[in-house]
Image (cartoon, rainbow, N blue to C red; front, top):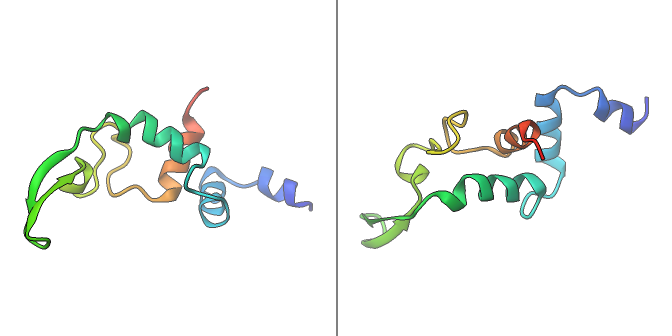
Length: 92
């Protein structure tokens, strides 16, 4: 079996895990798409951080246990595999 055939025969979960492990992440199509569709629309929230002892900017997900305000299928801080699977379902 060729590498192409192995990749072509992977399930969605297997391919997402494989891409997360071996492919470039920062600047990847799935990273850029997720940020554009969700993170860039999320306004920063100013709050006091006791660990740092100062006021800081936070994203909504940082203050809500990783849940994404705009992407309900992500219920915890998004793992690379989660972001890739969201990208798989996106239509161009």
